[in-house]
Length: 323
Image 1 (tube, one colour):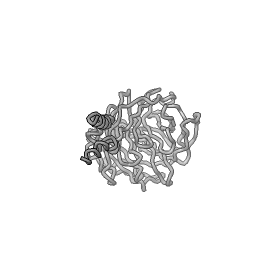
Image 2 (spheres, rainbow, N blue to C red; image 1 turned 180 degrees about the vertical axis):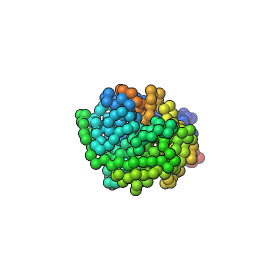
Image 3 (cartoon, helix red, strand yellow; image 1 turned 120 degrees about the vertical axis):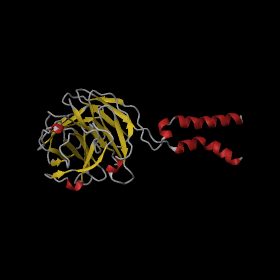
Image 4 (cartoon, helix red, strand yellow; image 1 turned 90 degrees about the horizontal axis):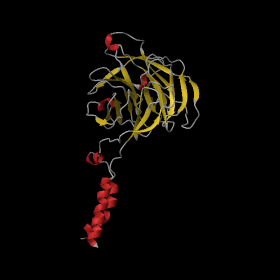
């Protein structure tokens, strides 16, 4: 009987270990995500070139997206199943080549804002100029994940005209640091994509700003990115792969990029450009250009909980101490 109890206790410990991700057990500090699962389908043909994606922080289960070049200045709210919740026209904004969007803080404390990047410049490497690149910021409206579709005009958008310190670039990645409010643009067409910053204090309506070069990535071709809601992780993708960088402690965001990134999974998509964390940083969404495209979600694997193992092993440990 004693031998049977010991075998059962050992089995409990083994089971506890087996329930955890093998990768997480071996490298508990490393981010680990499950393979993506389809959670929905974009349910409106008005979204036919989803180039940017943002997970709302203020509206539960709401995603924001917009089309690539050729559309008007508007954003679409979807629930995470892809149902259209509303079309939101950004009054006073232009749309030459919108490539990415994000959500983040702004001038009013406690208010979340939509940031929309008219930053695409496919001809930059051929010396052909386009109108100046612009980022628009507008207060995020209240949206219910169960509402009927609405068509709303959003007023009060601020516009920031941006330039690079080292010549025109094509870019498809726009991010805002939730801890500082700083804005980041990542270039696309270099062998090593370049990271540029605008301090939050310079994001004043009507401002013309020369961005600061801050870092390079180990690779180029970036098509989208996002910063986790707690500001500790940076997620950047290309068409076929993606990576995650960790901010070093409470340091500057750009200090993450000299470090080695962690590879994270993607699903095969026709032209996947968009990626965004969910509101809790518990995973991320992706979607491709094209009509009625799948929405994929990649759930984070929790780091091992030592208490689970201690609970499973505690009877055996107590018995050993009594001997």
